[in-house]
Length: 136
Ligand code: HEC
Image 1 (cartoon, rainbow, N blue to C red):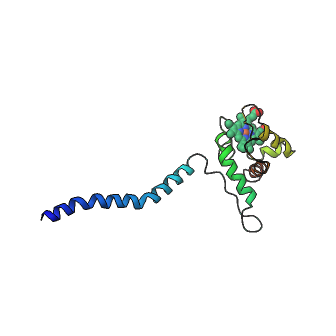
Image 2: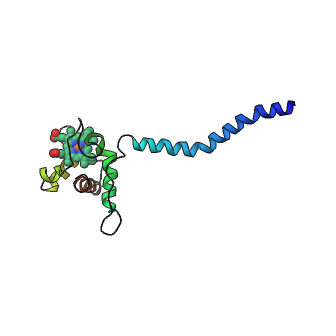
Image 3: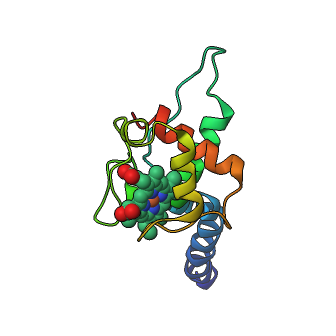
């Protein structure tokens, strides 16, 4: 009788602890998914190219955009109070020479920060291609 009572009062906490430990990776994965989902995770995906897979440069450009640009220019490039619209052909229209857009990202302009010291030339090219080709 006493044995059963002791057993019953000890087992549940152990089981709960084990369940919590077992669920840790799941909880962590859920937290990461939520963190990625709020804010800037919803920038348009890069579709498959002619070879049936997304072009790696555009995929890299999307990652840079989500990480460094979407906070001010919005997930889809439609602009926020902190940065103007870049989508729907804005870049090609405003900067027929792509070097002019590159220069703004490199050196900044007014409240637009300079990314020259933070992104490589390849990353800047990639993010501008993503903006021009995917954020139509
Ligand atoms: C802190 C907010 C902020 C961030 C982050 C930011 N921008 Fe900007 N961006 C701006 C603002 C503000 C302007 C308008 C600058 C002006 O008035 O001259 C701008 C302008 C631009 C322009 C020129 C748009 C036009 O219509 O003339 C381009 C291109 C641009 N940003 C690209 C980027 C890219 C690419 C990134 C990420 C690598 C980025 N921006 C990150 C705030 C931001």
